[in-house]
Image (cartoon, one colour):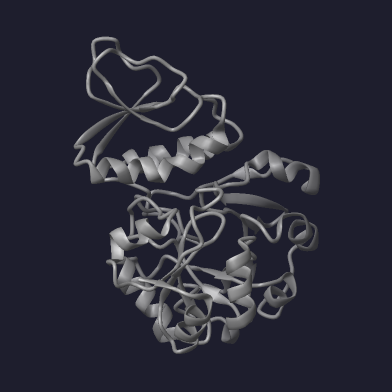
Length: 313
């Protein structure tokens, strides 16, 4: 059910959960002032309680109200990438951020989104806690229709159109002496070099047997359609079936192509990925081959990681 901005504000201020657009993906939003509503997010998604959520705020100044201390270069990162698709893990004043949102950790994830409708909403409601608006482990929602596919046509959605990026935010955490990327996202590692003076290491967490996750996207199978994905650096000529690939490449005769766009355009591929994975399920596809013949740097690195997680069994 599509709602207006005014209706969205009223619902959130009443302690309800709704879906909200951002430039990355749609989020399931609850006010930071309603811990019971935040708990409802976990129930709706089927999300493990030890998987913390992201607090979205309207400004850097609002984020600072919840932070116990600012790690080095916080201001430089915030001024360079907020509003935008960057999330920072920060030590918090614990009584100010509900424990359910941060999974009991002394830190929380914060972001200032750039989507104009979302910023307007945040200015009216105050900070919102929201993970991606999809069932846990499934491909993220990049349109209002995707949200309704997972939660039903009666679920309240603030429709902001198709998400510009189509890929979650990049998450950084201060680790002793430098910032580390703990979730790849819409900003590639190279984007941070001019600001930090170094290329942040990528440390995406373990396999579920190690430390607790500090942010969404760690330790669990994510972004996965029902279809079994087979990742291939080249598609054998004798193979037939469904291929997730690129519109400017030729695949074996008889293959059915689900295109991500041009092999020279990582932004288009990132924008299309979740829609393609969801389309596989809509079409009842059981198995698909994925053309992985693309670079392992820049935004392509994020795309590679998402597909690897989607194919994990």
